[in-house]
Structure formats: C-alpha cells, structure tokens
Image 1 (spheres, rainbow, N blue to C red):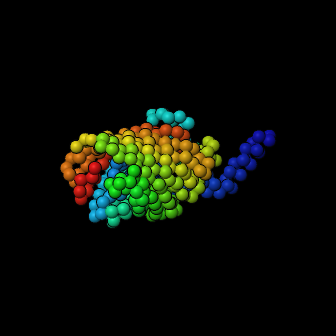
Image 2: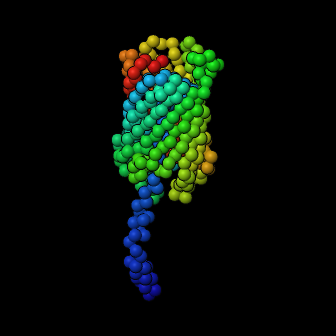
Image 3: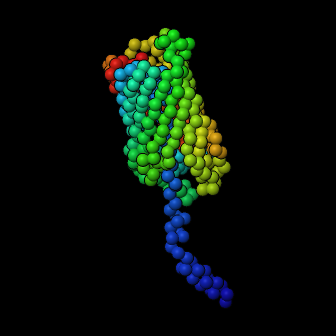
Length: 304
C-alpha cells in the first residue's frame, strides 16, 4: 500500500528538481589552467630545455619549431603505466615556436608560442576532457649574464625572468592568470662537454582538484623548479645531451620530474635538427608518463 505511494513521491521529487542539477553533475569541465609544464630554452646554448648561464652573442638570432607528443599529461592514476587507466587528457599533440635574440653581449630576450594541435581523453569521475585544440600560453623572457667564461670568469652565471601571458585557450587547458618564472642559471664548460643547472620558482594561482579527483594533494600552485643537464661539445656534426627536470610543490601538490635524452645534428651551419624524449616520474597530476619531441632550429650563425 505504501510502496506505490512512496515510489510516486520519489518520481514527483525528481521531476521537480531543476534539470540544471543533473547537467551540472554530468558535465563539469575543469577550471582553466595551464597544463603544459615544459618550457624550451629559446637560446639553446647547451641544453634544449635547461639554461646553462649563457646568452646569445650580440646580434645573434635563433628560432626553432618543435612538434611534441605527450602521453597521459593529465591523469589521476596512482602508478606509472603508459597503457593502463584513464586520463582526462590521454594523448596530446602540440607545436612550439621559439625565438631568441642577443641584444647585448650579456643580454638576451626570448619568446615561446605553443599551439595545441589535438588532444583527447576520457571522462574521469565528473571531469570531462578539454577542447581538442587551441592556442597555448605565450611566454616572454629576458636573460642577463652576470658572469661569462669567455671573459675569464670561472663559470657562466645568468638571471632569467620569464612571464606567461593570459591569452591562451581556457577550454583547452592552456590559459590561466599571469605566471612568473624567475630563475638563476649556471654552467661549466670544457672542451668536450658542458654542465648546467638552473633553479627557479614558478609563481601561479593555486587550484585544488583533490575533492574532484578523490586523491590527496592534487593541487597546482607555486612550484620550485630545478633543472640539470650534461651536453657533449666534442662532435662537429652530432652531439648528445641528458637533462633532468624536477618540480617541487610549494602549495601542497605532488612532486614530479622527468628525464629527457636528446640528439642534436648540425645539418648546416645555420640549421640544427634534433629529437628528445623521456619518461615522467612521480605522482604529479600534470606530469606525462612520457613525451617525445622532434624539432629544427635556425640561427644567424652556428651555435655551439
């Protein structure tokens, strides 16, 4: 007797609920933020991704274009497995154009413009994949050399300050408020190899995804950035490099890092061709399981 009445009341209550309540649960896109965490060194004096304290010579210009693929760049899985689990972004193709110019013997300016060509993913809990394509966050930077080995100093030392502009595509997870990345870069050179390291702090707005991902410490915010590289200098045509990048959260997130191996080929005095790639490590939500990059650079003079 009471069961049909109770069923009717439940159906009536559901009918009276606003349809927006269901829509909001079924379709909750992530808030806009910058998903891409890798930055290229526009001058690439040594490493392609880690500064070595050097600046381009006065009047020297370098431009490059890179095609990049990232596997699982936005995932809430616990372990490292490129083939397992689902991710809000499971595969991402992007292109990055960089340019740098030596204004003075000790002063360099640079820029980076990324564009997301295609990305895809799966719905995870109540989070849906972002837009497939869109403009990324442009970065502008300036680097000042404090010490230069070519002038007799024991090492190369520079200060680099870059800023991310809030003009990318928010729906493609490629835009947030203004970001700032000041860094101190240092390097040592010998005849056969070069070592470099940079230490910086990425300053950005804090976003907490823990409630939606149901994992602790899924937070993006201010982050200590540490990079180190060793590059060969002996080869006339071909040289290799290995670089390590680590992000240490300062706002409650997860530690993440990656190791990238690269081969650079001097095809012509003004043209370099290269490939680089490697695995991502750690549990940071925005750390891909691996990335692969192919690129070409053009310069007014031969660099290294």
